[in-house]
Image (cartoon, rainbow, N blue to C red; front, side, top):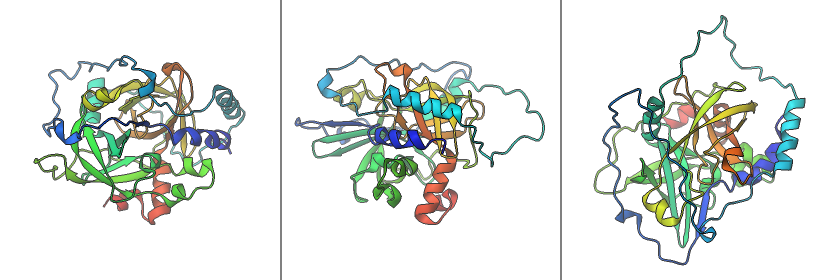
Length: 335
């Protein structure tokens, strides 16, 4: 298969594409921090480009625990394999007539939608902290992220869910769908194929109740990208941050990535500044339609972040995982 070789390798990296820190120092309680306000996002000029958060200053290496990723030799082999293969995604819908020229949406429009829907997972357990990204996908408060973000937690465990720039406490969420196909996988490929989990808000962060309905991204499970297509990425990367910065000044990051190749389940893209630890569960967004286009789960290994390759799951793969685990379509599961 087209992606067989790299799925086996990338899965090894996918399970580590989260910030994971162990510390013997006391962890300040999240409840002591400011709580997110549910006021709508507003801008004074729809044509104004939002500030792209610059990479933060590095902190001492002892605070950072980057995890293994795909080595460049393997990545070169993967790309060579992709070039040799001409497999076609047969169920893609082809336009019956030439498409009209596409108009790129203003970056502020993309950002304003994302900042009300993309969230930061801040999970504390004992002396360990796990940080990742996620996205709200229903008005009832279902949150989509990777299975490796949920790995090791039971269904009673709660992660703090934060939102905004800088991220502030929004509420707490519990796992409601963790694929057994991931938990009991015997190969790295099987883990990569099922690297999806769904959480749901369980309680507010403070005295203010959770909203009755949440802003959310709808997922078109038949949507596929195009090779060389530019997509926006939104996530909460944390690779270069220390604990205090993670706690008090973690920002939603917007960047761009270019599609190199894809099949039914996996999207390979390049030049993603969001290719950092902490971006697991981040999203790809179509810059012309503002639609969800993929779920980030892995990254290739390169010392220079802007040279890394990004690996994401297609909307179709999310439908497959949910249906295999629950017997329901994604839409019906969320209802």
